[in-house]
Amino acid sequence: MPARLLTVSSPRGGHSSALTPTMPSDGNGNHLVAVNPVLEKMREAQRESHRAYLKGNSDYNRAEMKSVSIEGELRLAEFWLKVVTKNLEDVGKRIEVHDWNFQKIANQDGVRRT
Image: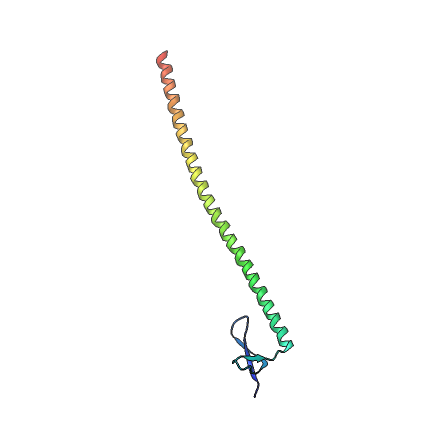
């Protein structure tokens, strides 16, 4: 029986043809693969490299999401700071008006008493 080529998926997508031939079928339709230790080491190194790439990408995405979250919290805090500052300014103006009215009334009472 002639040897067949085993097709494996590359970690970066697409297909690459390995030069590892398959052996005859085991009767269940499954082909037994002749293991080439050099190619197996190369595949394991590629898998490790791809795992490291995915982990690095995941860490980057996690850090980016944290950055986006912190930026959102900062914008929300700035919004509430503006709201509270505006409220305090309004309260301060009302206090000044009340103080001015109180002084005006107190002066009128002082003028009437004399």
